[in-house]
Length: 592
Image (cartoon, rainbow, N blue to C red; front, top):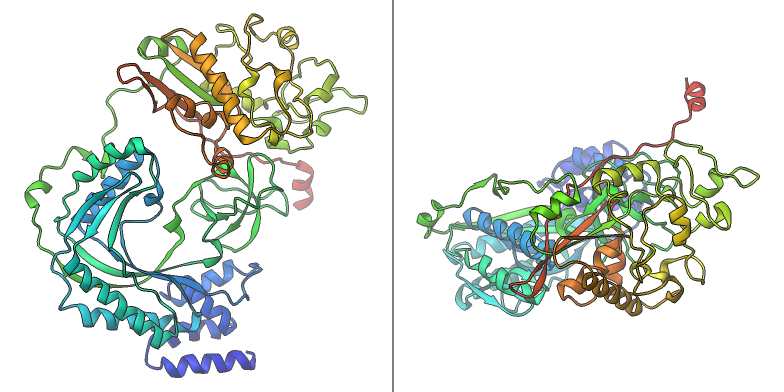
């Protein structure tokens, strides 16, 4: 052990003699871990057990930031438990289901007592002592019931805490901040403004009425045990997006991450230039390593999912003033709304049209493409020296249609893989011989994302006809291919899609389903004009569309009675599957 580390450990040991920290730190030091990394591991795991901290250190053995003196950030929240929490969680689920995700869904139900602050790893134990001291001093005066009053505005919905009890809760926060400053040498800013429990924040204005109706179903006088809870987070990733891994992934290249279900990945939206379509660059919370990963192996997680809970202080239980209402719960299974009794799973577009009276638009992303599986060099992998196509892997299509310039025309217009063709036929009703394809360049993706500075080279109608595609030669597009501008602005792009969708809807029958197949961006830019929503922020849009998997879809129905379109559940089930990496039998023989 280095001399500086020995002195640091001695200071911590002497100051905390008789407490739990040495019993947690000693085993880690005995295993040979340096004191500063052992303390870092304890802070990162909530100082629960030496075993958890040891496992963290083993997972982070290749973490390039392991030795960096970066402390955790801490915050203190007042959190409800019991029946009130159950009702709040019901609201969280229903509001997300009916009105989509808003900022409040990023964090669990809480009242903020102290904003996030930093604390050195060797002083975290003092925060626990500060919490206990402040709680003990406030316990007798803490309100037996915390009165909550519903407040609503055009972008905020939540409960405000009445003045008198709020003063006591604020005093507790100030006491904690003072104790933490003295014991742990931290600068803690207690909340001095209106105490509130946020229900919804930064939602669409047209969802306000629905959110208010859901909120009024919450009786704030439900029995509740309030706990002051200390959480921490990694301050480096505050402005990153958090992804949750759904499927296992074994790296096929040295610059890729190993993924296990349940892992969390931090992704910086501003640092994705090196990632090709369908991939992102992220940092694993489990290992601290950075690398590429397939984005469709993940889903968007909430901000608080990676926070670590350290210690809690529990206040008194309030009387249940609403037990009568608790017995009147609606029919639910495991806290979730009962599913509808009838399924909308259909085998063909014709049967779907027979069941849907309203005019509808189904927007679908294309199936898996060869470049998503075999990378940007896919064309070189399937081209012979004399420029002919051959099939090096079964996931390459059997053949390619003829193009005017030969196989090179596919370089920036890659075809579906064999799996992509199979996916499409499973999910898209096998309509290729029944419905004519109308080619609309106006819904082509943002040309800024396309390689080169010229108009995209797509198959002509004649080439499609020769390849036996059932294409309409009579359709007049809103935007001919030649009118697309290279590297267009975002505003020009969303305007182009809006105008195209207006023409598509106006020229189609007044009932039935309009099927729109395009890129992932179409799920946003082809539905928002129908829903009457303004264009999404450009940065949010760029990150959102990266999450759309093959055959991802959005379904809009026209509500003529109210004169608007609505986003509803798609009529087709999702298609989820894992990867199947390349296999070389020669490596197998050599390895054995």
